Image (cartoon, rainbow, N blue to C red; front, side, top):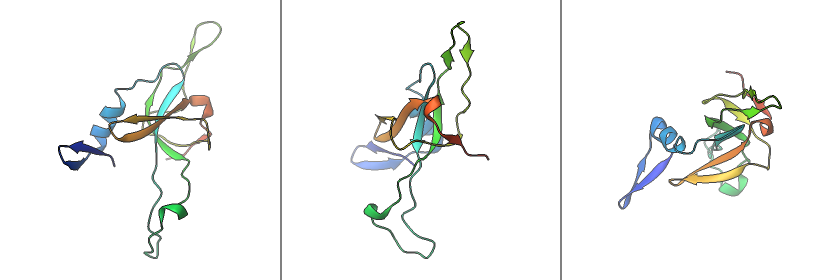
Length: 118
């Protein structure tokens, strides 16, 4: 969950508030805005892991989707992911975007490696 500074205190954002912040940035063409999922800091046995031992997360949730790229005939090619989908990202290639202290990533839909089935 996200946080926003309000005066001298941090206030936890609800999911719909975080989504509304991200919707201020509307992807164009075949771009997709995602928020990377956070690795668990505690093991099943209750041991807390230091930041240096956390696995790198390549999973993300789709926050916003552009309308799609155009083909040679000018027809829109639909994007295969939708808002709320969980996706697998490549290690590199996404552009980090910071919106109100929350970090998102912007990338082309064709750069997304896979979509997790519900």
